[in-house]
Length: 437
Image (cartoon, rainbow, N blue to C red; front, side, top):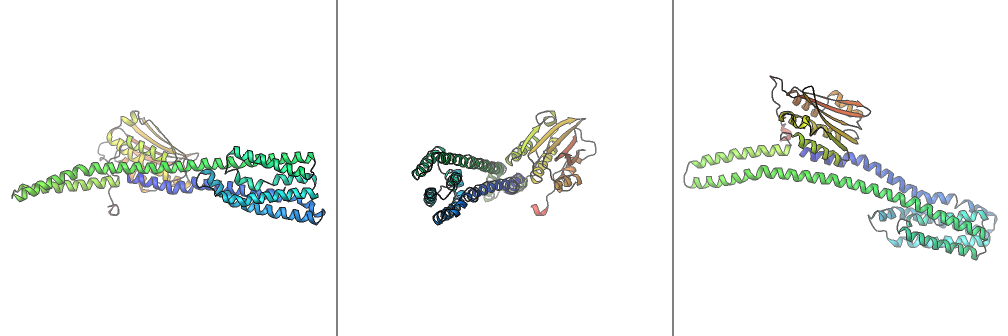
């Protein structure tokens, strides 16, 4: 029990912390960097190239073009500052302070006025107007689209497009250019909508799945703690009640001068020592392993760690029909093999298979994602866990093999004959080192 709890904690804090969560953080960072870079890409392309024409259109056009570029750059900086907060708002992690939109909204109005003024003084070429209109709302709408519902976003974008087209028409822009400007606004609004919100939605779903896996692991730990508490209660509750009753009886007998008080205290001493040993067995997890329980426990722990686990043959004659001693030995194999699956490599699937062949029970534990270090440890026989299992199975005339099975698979195979050869001792529990006491 203690081993299972430690394994779950180690898996949640180490394996998933350095694999799944790290990968997810990289994807999240890539998405945010992409959205932050998008306004700058528009700025140095469609937002800058048309302004080159202002160099030949007089000082007024040059001043308006320079002001447009500077204000647009400031708008990009503000957009980058608001991307992370808008992501958090979309995920429901923390609300976005709407006051941070006041300055970007004001700058958008300034950019619109500068664009209309450039069109009024003829500071840009006809084809450049559509490009500037395309760049006009990008920096503002990237964080904004994550803060409001899609319907609200589309309605407000339509209203903004009407205002821009109306202002351009008021300064004498021809109808063909007005249609191009309106089309550019529709394209950029839809581009921001279809690129930003799906990215934020996918990241939100992935983070929710990661949080759900963490919650599942924490629930597995909590369930194991409850089971441990129940075992401790079962072990100590009855014995402590008996000790209390016998102690009271011994006190009464001693007060009466009855020599039977000594016998009662001897019995109390015996029960106390037995209770102490039972507590050690529970704490260190050295109770006799039960094969069905270990199979269910291994499946639960592996699935809590995000590893799909399939158990085959547990309900057949290989699992149920085996003698208790063989089931106990195979239960230890399941526990150790499941622990190794969690500790080594990056597995995604594990298969536990029980079969009966040639008068023996065969247990196979196979997982993918094996690393070179795990394969080397298995093939060389390294590790005290596998060595202890080999000794335990040898006491029953069995054997244990562990090693690579090809295609990134790692397999542990335990074979135990159904009849114990004469002269072999029965399996004994593992000795406890002084450090474990």
